[in-house]
Image 1 (cartoon, rainbow, N blue to C red):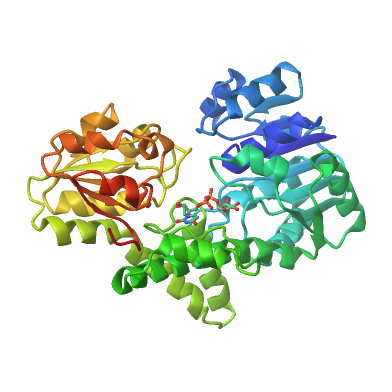
Image 2 (cartoon, helix red, strand yellow; image 1 turned 60 degrees about the vertical axis):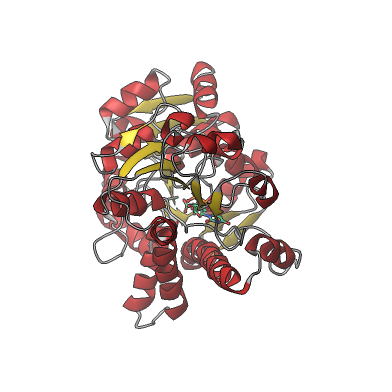
Length: 431
Ligand code: UGA
């Protein structure tokens, strides 16, 4: 099939590349011409393991092309995917400007019957409105069918998730459109769940909100564990054995970050609010996360006291490993608090440093190597569970001025730590 994907962020680019890999002809479209030129030269604008290789392969095999021109990109498309951003408005709602712009552009340029598939996360009812917008603005007598097809891939394992996801959700009441999408995804051998448009839109928000709820829940259990002398890792393992609960997303830490959970939880609270429903539980989840993101800082102050002129090694800045993304990462809040308290922050991240430099306080110094950040530090805080940090030689901590380590991700075994002469605090476990 001939496909077009509008938007070359995580969702759009990974979708485009993976659909090309399973044999379709894909045109990826973005208004950012510089980005398009880079991709034409095999330069991937995001850090995603395996993406450069897969993208280059499919370009070489003539299944993947890039353009900044909507008209050219839509010309032959049987199906057009909308995968542009829906950033957060000031009130927490989703900003639909980009999605609507693309829908209008499709209406004005599509020259043959087309299915428009919305991958962007959009509030319930948006796809119905896009259908009306397109119908009212299309220039030709062609048929355009809008379908909801939310995305469940994770940054850092986006290619794996696309090929081996648990389900593909298709929201449409048009049988022909569902059939065509089922055909499109057939090579992936992933179960398809087909439903109405509004339920499909809600599945996306409800899934992210539920996963965020699991995280905030286990983080609160962790905070109680610390006070009653239990170990949250063991508690989560024991809970996870119950198949009704499941072991995924029960890793206690310093809260969720990234471009999805923080934005989508707030958007769902807004969606509920718009129909006069107070989503009390989800408000709790968001508030717990705010509190949890500060946890490492609180523990540092508790153990070190005044942070003036103290060197603090911040290990990991990305919101999670295998990504260079620091959007809504706990590192933003924690480094802000540290610099405000007069500490000298020396940070290390294997991949996210360039993005961090654009976002974090300019006083932060970035170490080239993990050891350099730790050397002579008064304390070290672990914010991302990068395998480089997880597998480091623990003796490096002995090069600190005072060996105090606050581990926000519980990456070390307590038995290994006990062999060292360091003061170590983690989340929901007592040393
Ligand atoms: C999330 C969802 O997992 C995807 O299914 C969804 O498609 C995506 O949002 C989206 O809406 O686009 P992502 O934000 O890439 O994916 O990352 P996750 O792996 O879900 O992690 C989110 C945050 O939760 C990270 O900060 C991570 O450290 C934290 N987390 C995750 C925990 O603190 N504990 C856990 O047990 C799991």
